[in-house]
Image 1 (tube, one colour):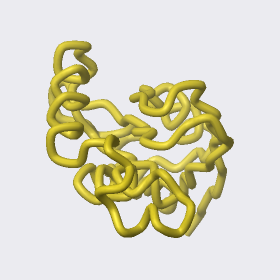
Image 2 (tube, rainbow, N blue to C red):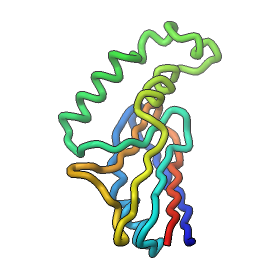
Image 3 (tube, rainbow, N blue to C red):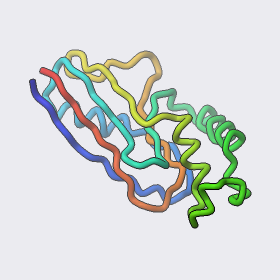
Length: 139
């Protein structure tokens, strides 16, 4: 069995954003030289997410509105977590909904996606560096 472990680093300049990381992950699959296996991609921070969906700006806007309705950032005082001096309780909740990681099969040396599927990094408390782990295993 072979494996590759790499870390992607992101510093999103806004509080929230969705970044398509599919090209980065595809490049790592090629680098791994694995033909059949699995690719794990997970956010290493509790206010960020990795998820799979369509690369369509309207959908991303819908996510933004939906998540803000579920866990609005303001007023900051509505969250007990923010009594610790933080202001990111909403980011923790948004991450919980969007998920921590994805696993994608590798078939014939390529990510084995369904139609329109791509991998995204979701940032919910930006303006600082955060890492995403990519672990590829297989033959």
